[in-house]
Amino acid sequence: MTLDADDLNDWDRRILTYLRDGRATPGLVRKLAVEDGQGPITRQYINGRMKRLEEHEHLRNLHDSGVYELVDDPEVKEEKVDGGVEVQPEGQLGPAPIHDCPDCPFTSDEWDEWEEHRENCPGRE
Image (tube, rainbow, N blue to C red; front, side, top):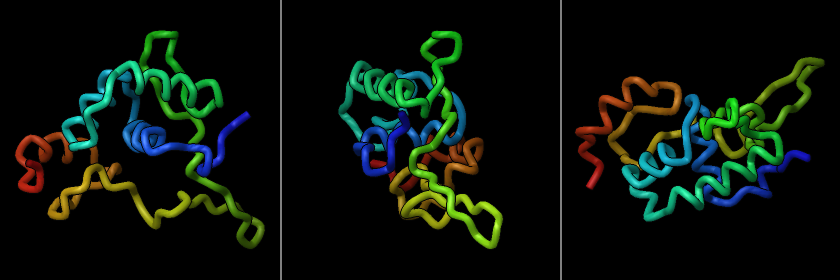
């Protein structure tokens, strides 16, 4: 049984944000979250949240390796529009921001550019 967006906690949402850009381990999610000022948090807690999302068929643990990928985003709902299907993330009008720096132009669609930017971001402490 899959989850609705209302069933998610803040960490579930953060995990989904990182996984929208590709695969990750709990350790990598923890590292990125702490770098983004979202910590402190333990890898074990993130691992438990990722396992829960996997149990509800939102994530896939590739070959039981601890590397997860997003397969069904519970924050995306489908609405019928004129016979077609329109997919829109709940509460969002575009790509999710990667972190809270007001000067950062990067979104989750621009992972490579952000990887380079995050090292020297003027909005980070």
